[in-house]
Length: 207
Image (cartoon, rainbow, N blue to C red; front, side):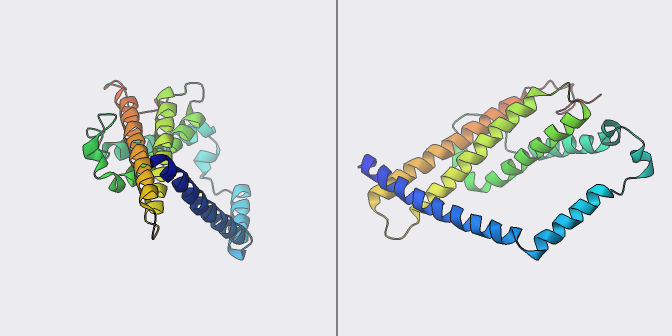
């Protein structure tokens, strides 16, 4: 029953994701051809050639001028992580956290974006001393996003009207499996984040 349901579930997911991808592609092409997009592109081109730099910043090396912004990026990341339920994610497979998973995904996705921003800042300020913990954190949160989106796709497919019980069951198994991967990714991120020593500043020590 599971094998037959899995085959039907796979076919259903393939149809739905193909349709979503086609619609997104059409919407992107339409946006790229719009007057609004060309206006934004023109504004960006002008801004790149006529950047309104402060006089003091214009005379400094990029690493020195951008140091306050890099510090801000690391501070925003630390504050966002502090709001995460890392204590609840302290086990690789946490049934209690799974019960409220869908309301917790967004903050973790935001932290993923801030980790990327912090890595960019570090590459500018201290490219020779890359913090491998940021790379490890990024990998964990990339896995988190992929699993969360896969679980959401399975849940959406399971809501298809008049779906066969075997197909719904297979989708439920897939959803649970992906949510376990979500919790495992949160656990992995928590281990990376908490591995720093207390006396060091949060992420990305800069000279």
